[in-house]
Structure formats: C-alpha cells, structure tokens
Length: 177
Image (cartoon, rainbow, N blue to C red; front, side):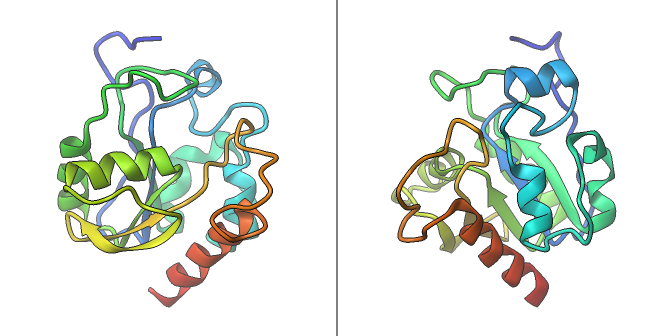
C-alpha cells in the first residue's frame, strides 16, 4: 500500500532520546489506523510497559506522545505499508541521518530483519538478538524479536524462552542510560 508521496506514518523523534524503536515498515493494519504497531496481536505496547521502558501502559493511539517518555518511533521504509518484509525498499542511510540529527542513546530494531538491514549496510554480519558490538550513527544497537502476532509460537528466541525476555534486557539497559 503506497503512500501518496509522504510517509505512511510520521516519525516521532526528538533530540537526546533514550531509544528509538525502528521497524521494517508499517503493517497494513497500522497504516489503516494511522498508528505504529496497531495490528491485531502486535504486542509492542504491552512489551514497552512490561519491560518498564515506559512507566505506564500505552496503546497505539498514544504513539505521538512517546517522546515524552524518552523514546521515539520510525521505520526503515517510510513510503509504503506491507505486512511482510519481502521486496521492501529499505533506506538505512535515511535512518542513519535521523539518528545523527537526534542522537538517541540506543536504536532498538524491532525485528531481526530490520537489524540485518542496518548490519548489511555497515558491512557487518547478520546480527543475533540483543545488544550489538557496533553502533549506527553513534547510537548503540539492540535487536529485539518482533512483537508482531505473526512471530509467536517459537520454542526459544536466541536462547531465551520468550520474546519479552529480550525486551526486559533492553529495559534494564535503558534504565542504566
């Protein structure tokens, strides 16, 4: 679903955030609702609260307020929505420019695919989940398992029993920042 010239969803960024969460592209449900991570079964907002990344539960309708909690939102593909990653025109240079302009402490990719695209652009190997030993435009990198409802039912997530365990680790690191 292409946008009419502009971004499908606006970035929610500000200088000096603790973390910017970056997905591949908005899903079709998110694009239709006009909010990040708004698809049925997506647990992004639940994980933010459970991992104590934000102090109170939020919903997709709160996405424009996230900078007040020290976090931001963006995607690697701004001009189209799609509920799978095949054939997406990733724009890592544009993400790097945003990070350089806003200087968040962390960039948290909300899927291995998003992290892989950044690593590839930097000439790095495919990342696993968790904190990486490289940065992107001066921001430390953390790769999270996707909160999408399509990413459920695995036996383990790179050695962790649940997706939430990785989000909790990021929450701990953000509280240290």
